[in-house]
Image: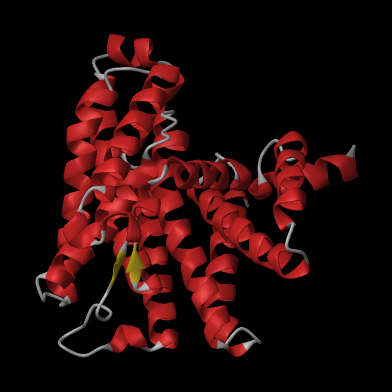
Length: 314
């Protein structure tokens, strides 16, 4: 029964996203919004692997997202738009950045880890802002979206929607499989009690570094998709505020399982859009709502049904 409940939520979310274009969300701007939510959900899944899996709270995750986006920019400027080249380049560049920075950051824990990842993220931000050849502070407008087999399939909003959905589902399945594997069990053990894990022969450092690198690759793929969704890349992609947004998505959805990050990302993006249409001062409403969610949804949105059942039975 517990396994069925665990599988029901991600299946419901993915099913609703698949049906969305045919149940009133087929307009161009609505598909764009859903694509953005799914892309950020993918990036949040990578961050969940660090926070929920390894117990590492990062404030530099947006830098990995930005590296993936700027890989698309570099390829575009060189006249290379084929997805078979662009996507692996974005994933590889972000994973390499994660590997190099993680090799230093993971030697620390707690607030020191948070501050080091923040510092690396800001280094990436200022580096991107200094790249005058790619627009500097003004950003870079892509000449066109990435091609698939030479064809511009991604310019079709519906096709792009289902591409994002397919990659999101694959990322979610990969995170769940990784968590259930021996690697995932050791990773969680290092989160719960690193000293005990080390005492039985598992050095936390390489496991955490591999997890950080995998999270970087996921963020790189999300960055490549985000660059195509907006057709514009700017240093703001790497800003620490975006890292804060991704971290809050993970916390809002719930740290218990990967689908919590997905649920948090979708909820945050959609509520933000809804409030922005109600009032131009929507941030004054959005902030308190987030605070209330943290205070009263201890298990995140994912844990809300169980919390309601306990109150009903109690």
